[in-house]
Image (cartoon, rainbow, N blue to C red):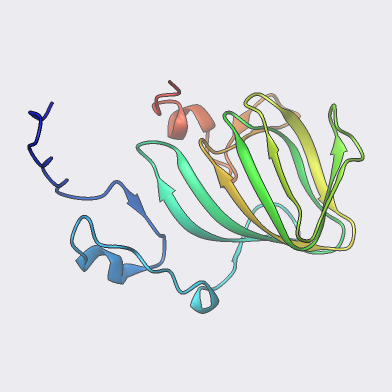
Length: 165
């Protein structure tokens, strides 16, 4: 704890990073990180027709911001939002395919957020592009009972250490 009037010490290294932006490693701990999103390649996910550009990932806190693109008809299967999830639809639309809000549609220019613990599957019948922000990455539920993250890794092994308080 810092004494009143004392400037806090700068961290030695940031815990957050922008995957694929190697130049950030050379920046001072408190320098801004500019991400040239247009220059970043889209990365395929394990879900057919869904690609991402990870903009910010902080493993220590679980914070993730990503640009997501869904091809027409692509489905993001059964998943839970561990903490609050926020999505701004930039192009196209996003529709709840299952869950308590089945049929709700968020169109281009609209913003939707979901409370901690909400669970659903989503799809984009005509395709779309979204800015998605998570306090903790989603849990995906497979038919075999396994729980994974978006990359297919065991959710608890990767994210279970993050403090949810």
